[in-house]
Image (cartoon, rainbow over all chains, first blue to last red; front, side, top):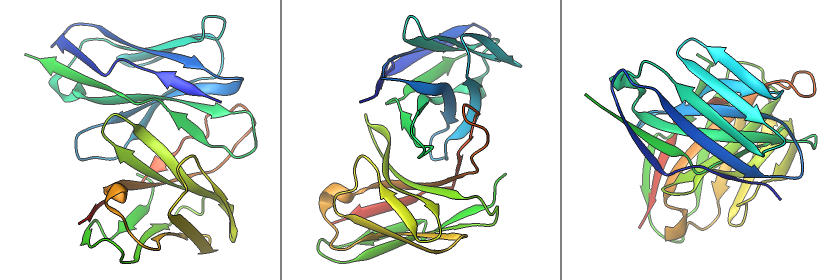
Amino acid sequence: GQSLEQPSEVTAVEGAIVQINCTYQTSGFYGLSWYQQHDGGAPTFLSYNALDGLEETGRFSSFLSRSDSYGYLLLQELQMKDSASYFCAVKGLDSSYKLIFGSGTRLLVRP
Amino acid sequence: DAGITQSPRHKVTETGTPVTLRCHQTENHRYMYWYRQDPGHGLRLIHYSYGVKDTDKGEVSDGYSVSRSKTEDFLLTLESATSSQTSVYFCAISEPGLAGGTDTQYFGPGTRLTVL
């Protein structure tokens, strides 16, 4: 089976840097994705790591280490609008293209 | 934004009644998914479809059925709603690319269902 663990809540100050971790137990997967969800809204895609290493998209970066069964999302220059829930997800090796989501990390950005 | 709509957006119903939620897409994506979201559980897959009339179960399929008679529509039915099915339901779509690719899922706005 597959399971992903994330911290339930993280608090940070506007302008700071925050890292949201995702550890997983899975027999194999194609890649690690990150989704953002604001309160009352729908999840939206942020980033994807197919290979180990760092992927950068503007203020957001995502990292994957398959040997450590670990990934993280890094948010820089935090803004109030970054307050949201963040979910990591893996796509299994079967043909279903299903995503298995972590339980999510609620990020609160304070002034 | 991907063209995905869900109806109804809000519904209150009573235990034991049947409920059908509709997901409609205008993107002609092959894959469609139904998730439920509950506090502390993230998004859990109920059922998914990989083509017209082709569906399969997800991790929390008990008490739910689905149908897909057209590419653009994916229906989720609760045959006899229970209070444990009170949740927010999201539909998502994706178009598979190469193996190992992103296969981003695009989500609809959600349906908030309350079963009394």
